[in-house]
Image (cartoon, rainbow, N blue to C red):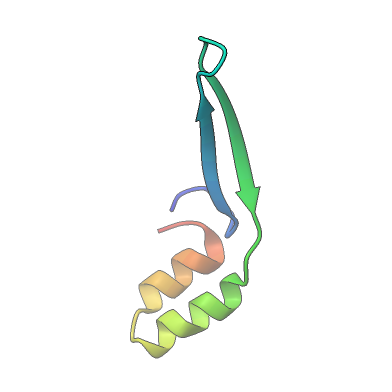
Length: 55
């Protein structure tokens, strides 16, 4: 949660060629909607992290 952006991030790892290759991905999603849901559940800390990418 310290990426500094609300985008979801993940990495793909592949060793099909006998050598590890890494691809980093960043994905948009409705983070404001997710943050609103977190607030409704009483988690303003999670809502802030979802909006800012920082915990």
